[in-house]
Image (cartoon, rainbow, N blue to C red; front, side, top):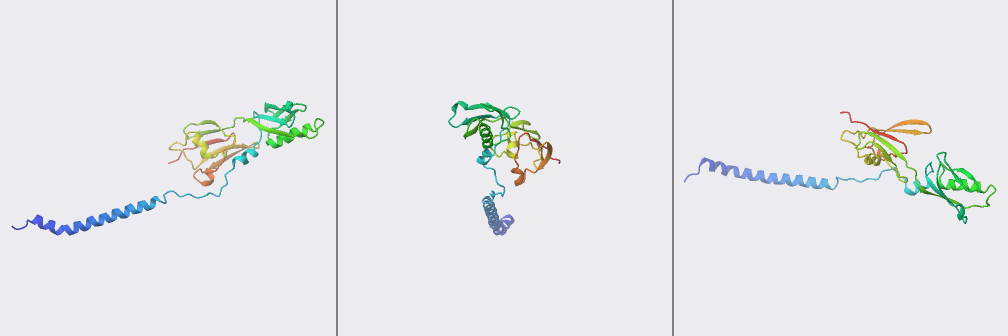
Length: 221
């Protein structure tokens, strides 16, 4: 019985099809290998040359502000222990010496200010310590393309960066432009406008300060 023309064609094409299948398997193997090789380098970690503020450093350099509640203690003088809120004019009222300005001072500087006043005719060598009982609320305001625009509280002892501030406000919207975040800040009676590229390493380390106004603009397509 003679083979049909179709059987003859299949016979001739069989080696070609076999080579095609083998080549396809090789290409798939190579592609999978390349993808797997890429998996090991998909996350690259590197150390930035930008020092992060330490918690202890922030606490040591903390300066008292109005509405802070502080405790003042004189060693071996329990009757002079006082806890009070710092007045709006930055002062506290202390036994024997009256009003003492402590706003703008570190805890050590405030202790020295009280001690120096006590030395003026009241005590020979008073050992004074000052501590924080409760911190006055410190806030920043964020507007524009974020999930929850509004005013938020700053943590007392934390290097509170711009990404944290935006995340606390619900993150940026789909059209929020993180490359041109505008920070309006008042320092020593002058107002500054700072444009921050939050996609850069330095931008991600930008620290938010009390009363900052942060605006996340729209991305212009």
